[in-house]
Length: 293
Length: 293
Image (cartoon, rainbow over all chains, first blue to last red):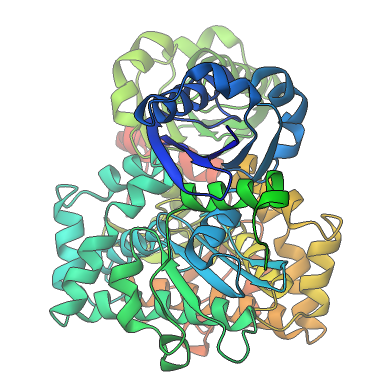
C-alpha cells in the first residue's frame, strides 16, 4: 500500500497525518512540542508519537512507517543545520523538511498561485507564483514581526508607560494595563525582563477590545498594526486574481480591518498545514501516481 | 580627620572619591563592574577597591575607611532589596544608597533646582525642585528608553530589514547596515537573539553620521529620537529659569538638535556623578560642619 506522511512540528505541539498516495488523509495524530533547535530528542519523540497515533487512527500497522515517505514542516529558519541529525533520527523511507510557512501555504492555497499572511504571536508573509516562493518578514519580535500579537502587546506596554509618565494622554486602555501591574512601573519592567513574545501577545486581545469601544490608544495601536500588515502584503506584489489567506490566531480580528485592496483577495484556507504537508508529500514522492498540475 | 566618600557604581566600572567634610575631593579611584544585582561579590570587591585607590591617591591610611561615611549611587531600580546584604558587606561607618540618576543630578546641578537628561545606551530624565525629585522614563530598552542609543540602533536594524523586504525605500544607511551582516537577514536575526542594549547602541553613531550627510532614513530615526527626548523633557514641566544638563555618550550629538524651548535651558554640568555622591555625603553626614543652602 502506497502511503505518505505529512507533519507540522511547532514549539507547542506536533501534528501528523497519514494519507493515501493521492493525498486522501486516513488518520491524524497529535503530540507535544517539536522544536528541533531547543530540544532535539523531545522533538524527535513528538514527531514519532504523532505519526504512530495517525497510523493507529487509520488502523494501519506502524510497521509501515519505515517504508513511507514524509514531508515535515518545521518552525525555525536554520533547520538545514539539523539535516544530519534528522537523517539519523527519523524512521521514514525518505523525507523532506520545509518551513512551517511553506506547508501552511500549500495547505491554504493548494497548488495554485497566491499568498498567505500568518498573523499570530509573530507574523510572516509568503507568496507563490508558478512554484516560485517569495517571503517577507518573520524576523522576530525584537526588530520585526510588525502587526503581530507580540508587537501589539509590546506597543501597549510601551504606550502605557509613556502615559504613566505624563508623556502622552492616558486612556482607559493604558490605565487598565497599568492596573494589571498594580500601577507600579517597576512591576511592568520586571515583567518585560523575562517576558517571551507570547507573554506580550496575551495583551493583544485587550487592545482590540478597547479599540472596538473607541479607546484612542487602542485604535492607534490597531491602526499601526493594520498599516504594517497592509504594507507587507503590498511588498508581495500580487497581481490579477491571486488570492490571500489569513492564518493564525489574530486573522479573524484583523481580517475586516485590512485595506480594501487586500480585502478583495481574501479567501478561506482550503485546509490546514498538516494537510499542506500531506499534499506536498503526495506530489513529491508519489507523483508518478497522481495527476500534477 | 572628618572625611566623606562618594561612589558611582555601574555595570561597566566603579568610581570613588574621598573628600574633606566640606566636599573638597582629595583622591579618586576606579575599578571594575559594580552591578549588585548580577554579581554581588564582585560589586562589593569593586566598591572597596575603588575606595582604597581613592584613599591611596590622597595618601590617606585605608584604616580610616571604617570610620568614614559614604553615599553610593548604584544603577538598578530595586536596590532596596539588597539593603541587608550591603549592610553586612560594606566597611563604612554609615552609608546611604541612591540611584545613579540622583548622584548624576547632584553632580550636574549642585544643590539647586533643574533637571538632567541621561542620553546614553539608555535614557533617563530627572528633575529636582526645592529638594523634591521627579523622574520620567528609564524603563529599559524593550518598552522604554526612547531616544537612547539602544533604541536608535534597534530602529536602524528594524528599518533596514523593512528596506531589505521592499516594504520601505532602501537608503545608503540601510544598505550599509545590511552590508555589516553580509546582506543576510538571517545573520541580522542571529545578532538580535543575543544582542544586549549596548550592542544595538554601537550602531547609533552611524545613524547620526548618515543623517548629517542627508540620508533620509538616518534623518528619520534621529528626528524620532529628538522628538521623544523633547517630549520627555516637556513631561518634567520645568518652569522659570530651571536649567537642564545633558549627560551621557550621546549628549553632544543630540544637544544641538533639541527644540529651542529646551535649548535655552541647557548648561554644562558642574561636576561628574562621583562629585555628586561626594556632595550628597558631605551634606548628609557632615552638615553640622558645612553651610547648607
